[in-house]
Image 1: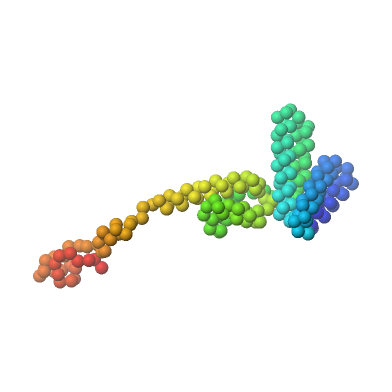
Image 2 (image 1 turned 135 degrees about the horizontal axis):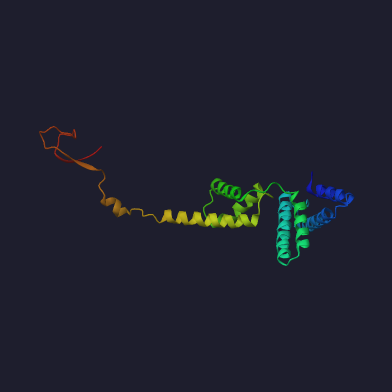
Length: 203
């Protein structure tokens, strides 16, 4: 079902049930979506924002309410904090199961390997793929911080590898082409199998 249709259906059900919290929250969701659709159509997107962008919008609404709930709790306004938390529960109904921190790290590491990402300059490409594959399943602002951390570590590791000493042409030229060993004098049993004395290259 289209998200817009789903939101409107939930609103109608909440109004019939006289569920004040759900009704108010759904109206806020629908209003926010309409604003974004209008802006998207202004840029040539006739269908409005995508489902992935809707998921991102909902996550942003949750984050705003989490911050408000914390502020109210610190100000000793538990009733307002409780309302924010109830709105969060309504919004969460439309999001997929959230990945744990460990799962987010594994997803990031997997994409870094799959896409052969090597430095911070490719962060935008990595973030775009992460949003495409895991829309609504993680906090993208938090994921962005983890990506920076991973790429910084990867960059330092690759830099260390680049600084490992590589022999110069002259250092390589000064080395014997082959390892050598002593052979017994002429006339003795020749372990080298070459019938000569002195130093011979080992094959």
